[in-house]
Amino acid sequence: MFKKHFLAVYLCVAIFGLPLSANAQFDNLLKDLANIKLPAKPAGNAAPNITPTPVGTPGKSGGLMPSDQWCRQQVGSIEGIKISNDIIKTEFKISDLDGLQDVFLKGMSKGKINKTFPSAKFFQASFETKKVRAIYDTFLAFPEPETLAALIQISRSTEEQERGDALMALAFLHLQVPEASVSPVRWSELHQAALKNDHYTAIVFRARVNAYGELGVKNIGSSLADLVGAGNLKSSYSKPRGEKKEFDIQNYGLVHTATAKDIFLNEPNMPYRQQWEGPAQMGLQIEAAQKSFAERLPTTRVGKMFAEAAKYNAESIAIGDDIIKATQGGNQLEGQLLSIKSLKASAQGEKPVFEDISPEVQAAQIKMFAKVGTLDDTQKKMLATAQEKRLVAQNIISQSYGDLMQVMTANLGGDLVQMAAPLPALSAANNSLIQSCLISAKWDQAMRAKDVPKPDIKKVESTTKDLNGKYKD
Image (tube, rainbow, N blue to C red; front, side, top):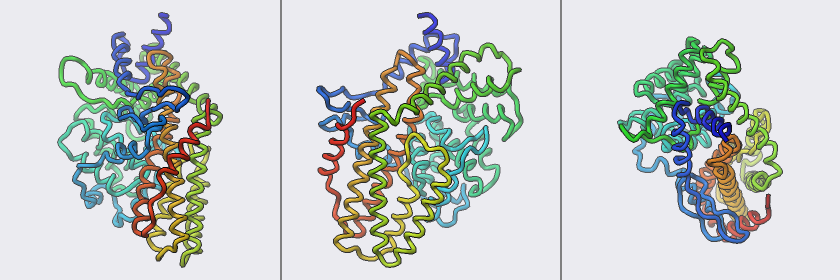
């Protein structure tokens, strides 16, 4: 029992940045995690009624969380922000905002950039506030001018925590797409600005800069001090005395963990090495658990459901291709689509746990539909069918996300290594769901412009329910 508790506390240091000296912090952590609200499981064989995000309201009858509700919560993160797209030119050299999406989709297809900054996606769920996390996730999933403008706007606001988050979010985007940055050192200027207020994300990133010496001077001692400082800063936000601050409940400190573990494995002369052995070993156990989870996933209910979602999304794209072929100039447009698909396939590399929903292809199709003329009744019906398939896939992804969240929260207060096992899959499902929300909304706009009738929502719900009941673990 003592050993299990000891390892759990070590994991709190590794994942959540808590100091080893206070065992009470472990109990506080479990209380915080218990705030993740999941609706009650319905009776009988109905699917678990799971809210895909930590907070929200229960789904409709039948145990399904309606994906449109999730979409409103996620995509609505920039509502109420006064946005001017003109602000983008102060950060990025993109004169034609119609091409912004292409610039960032291409830039974010890069693999591991360097050890300090593997990619912008590596730093997802590493912020202090859920608002900036949601906007950042939305932009990475489907980059659009309004979302980027919102991040820039928040980075200049008077709200300290959100400003710090937005400064770091922009720094990561500048590092991901340096060719579009207004300055090669702009990322550093934003990072330094965030550090002025002792910001968690900024301090953890400085730890990585100090750890590797690629973007600054290497200093392992300073890196370790930053990791300790970040952990203490996070724990201080919830102290009874002093000003309480938000700390995003989806920020599990995985960047902090990865940095500490990597230093331990690659720096044999690191200071206080013995004190870091426990967190490093636990980090390795988490990696092994995540790998095992990913290997098993395709044979599970979640994996099989996501394969169905991928099939429905592929069918919707195929219908779009058929419509484009039948329009004037369709052969040329089809050639453009094939080129995009070819580039995407060559850049895909190792097959991910969850396939994304081809945002590049979907975005290209939407742009092409804006150029075609009037659609006949057959083409309109095909377009409505394609949208129905997208919405079925969206509902399935939403349910899969909820199932993964349930797997993770089932281990609260118990095996914390197993609790962390589904996190990469959860992140990938989250990314796919955001893409689905945005793409289906864009297609809805395109359909209205072409006077296409709305899809049959009852048919969508019936198909989703049938698929949901088809798979059992």
